[in-house]
Length: 323
Ligand code: NDP
Ligand code: 1BO
Figure 1 (cartoon, protein in one colour):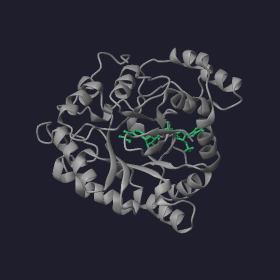
Figure 2: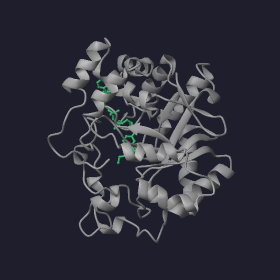
Figure 3: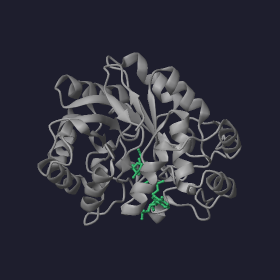
């Protein structure tokens, strides 16, 4: 498996397993099966409500000799209700306790959106903190503290635009090493990917297959299908592989890590095998033409009447089609 290297020599396997919406009752088997199939990179988050069951799968994988801790690259994320330098540590400790780990390989600020402590998804303005109540650079200091304490090896961001990263960088004692963002042929974000790569920040692609199992309140009605797209299907036929594999191989060819979610053994193997598929320059050029600036996770759930966020302040884009 190809890896992305950090400046200290650590390596992040380029294809990992997403675990959002992998239900308790299913995620234990999915993680055990994924590790047996060869996955060495797991993407988790406190928000996903399944870290304790993932932790049980990890403990059993270690005790039964499938892998050692050092074989795995494990990410978790800080939700907005724990922004603020002093509040990072308790949230991180909760993830570590649930996952049964002494350290994470990577810890991310999940969204650049500070929330009040008792809020998960806000339904009114009271659910948000004002930016000056928990500035992002103070939260970042909490992640830096976690590196100093040996609780995480690398720290990064998620859902951060160029403007938000550029505003944060001057405050960083330790630079962000990853930005995890939505990416797929319908949302290629060339400018953001290029900026991150030029700044030495690895990019990880979420929702690479279109996230069709996300909750209804995060959907906006009719949406395009990546898996049923004719162009992707024709490239898949030319490589004797599946559309899902083309969608995943595209990131690997772009030097971007990718974390598809599945709980099904056959798909786990299908998705992992995609990391070995080499798309041609012609395939990449054809896929480039599919960009339409389309977000499956458009962040509409952050836009509360009277709240502090707008689509513009969330994504810092001039228009939905901006790169
Ligand atoms: P994905 O794009 O990975 O799509 C998941 C859906 O695709 C599921 O319905 C899954 O079904 C299905 N699927 C998986 N493999 C195949 C296949 N080979 N063929 C057909 N269908 C397939 O969506 P996610 O939104 O889950 O994104 C992936 C991961 O990224 C998340 O799980 C999470 O870890 C991370 N993420 C991070 C975010 C952030 O804000 N930082 C936001 C969103 C995601 P089934 O399970 O039944 O196989
Ligand atoms: C709000 C959805 C986050 C998934 O990572």
